[in-house]
Every structure is written in structure tokens, then in C-alpha cells.
Length: 354
Image 1 (cartoon, helix red, strand yellow):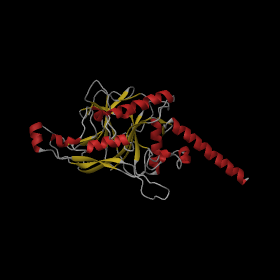
Image 2 (tube, rainbow, N blue to C red):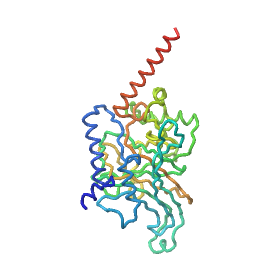
Image 3 (spheres, one colour):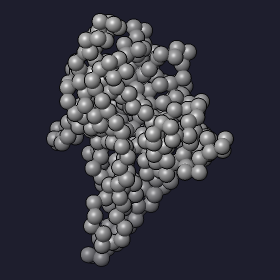
Image 4 (cartoon, helix red, strand yellow):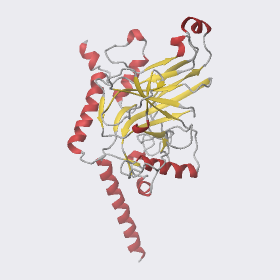
């Protein structure tokens, strides 16, 4: 019974989550001596253990195994008498098999959907002085004793597909103040123009911690009022990446970041704002230094009535260098080999023409 609680036969569980994070960090400490490490996966529904945790959360409450640490869960303003509603579903996806398989490739993902209603319940207003309504939220499972990223990572990567509405991203980190929450925002408007691509490359380069700091330089988050701190790097492919795009498994429509049909959104940790009980704290503390993530959540509270839909594939902590997400050492070595191979092929073709 105890074993099933911490190491369930189906996979997943809080102990496996605890071990996976710490094993990755320990392995990187031993073998990755670069100043900026490669990504660390927090959640990915292409991993069996994360799928098992989600399936467990979708079971009726009486059939769940329970435990100290919470699993995936949703919440909405019904807790204060509101009329919003939401639910989560797991979509299996499918990976093409064989050379002649023409089926659409889709990764497994979590779909969070529902309806937002900003109407205030009259009885709640009179009895509890409720003055605002219209929100829905989803929360990841908790990391036992947190995910101790320290100062080794600079941003949160989200591989997702949204409906264009603005979602808050909430990071619950270890803090002396239990009600503290760091909050950023993501929004997607669909197709991007060439001008958008140029702006995106500039914005992503601004996140590069190797760039020289200049207090007088406006970053993309110091721009026009009302803009959200969001970087979409789906289209961001530099010349070197273009050379290897057809061979690099990271650009695979199923295994890639992002996979086909989804987009990758990068939120630098330094641009998260400190909040408490949904309000901005007057005194801000930057989310840098010793980052220890306890859980991650998404909230929709844009004040607009209507249906919403949010699909999530993976969450990773990443570093940005030279305008690109830093890969693992193995990925870097493979890129170098592929670039050398392509260069040799070009040289051989040139010699053949002569």
C-alpha cells in the first residue's frame, strides 16, 4: 500500500517526480561544465510517468490513490459562487510509423477547456461581499521539496497551443511568505508576419544573459504599456539551424520543441512579477538566484465571457544564448557533426564540378 502511494505500478508518483529532477540536476553538475546548461524537463506528456500522473488526476476522487502532494487539478470561480467552469482532458496523439505512413503526427497533450463567466452571484455579493468574478485555473502536480533550479536556468519554456486569449502563468516558489506567487503572461495571436519574425529574433537576443547589460536600452518588456512579457520563438531558426533542421531530432514533429501544430513560448524568470492573493506586491523581489519551483499554474481572468481552450505539451526550464535555446551537450555535439558533414558534402560537390 505504501509502495503504491509513492511508486505506483502504473508509473508516475511524487517520488519518481522528486528523483527525476534531482537525478537530472546531479548528472548535469557532473558532466555539463558549460556556463549555461541545457534544458531540464519539468513536465512532458510524451513521458510515460507524466501521462500516468495525469491519468490518475482524471479519475473520480474516490478512486485516486491520494498522497501528500497534489496532482493535476482545476479550479474556477464556482468556489465563490461564480458561474465559470472548466475541465481537463488527455489527448493521446499519435506518432507515424514507417516510411509510408501519411497519418497526421500529433504529440499527446493536456487539454484544459471551459467557459468563463464574469457575472457576479447576487447571493455571494450580499453574503461575502464578492465584487469580482470570472476566472479559471489549472495547476501542475507539486514537486516534493521543490525543483531546486538555483541560478542555473534563466527562463520557462512552454510548448502549447492557445486560443489567442491572455493567460497568466503562475510560479509557486519556495518562500518565507506562503501567499507569494510569481506571475507572467502568455498570449498567442496565431500567424506572424515577417516583421514579427524580425522583432522576435531581437527580443530573444535581449534575453541572452551573455549580452552586455545596458540600462539605457529598452528591452521588449519596457515597451508600450499593455504589452505582455511574451516571446514566441516557433519561427526562430537561424542559419545554422536551417542546415540541420531536416536531420535534427529536436525539430521532429512529434518529439520536437515545439512539436508540429504547437508553438514554443519563452518567459524569462526576470520578467515575472511578485503577487500575493492576486494583487501586485508593492515591494518587488526579482525571481533570480535560488529558484526552487514548488508548482506551476495557468489562470484565465481576462474579463471576457465565453469559451476557452488551452493545450499543453511540455514545460521546461531553459537558458538562452545568442538568441537560441541552449541545447544539451549531446545536441551540441550532434549539431557540430551535422554541420561538418554538410560542409564536407558541399566541398565534395564543388570538387566534382571542377
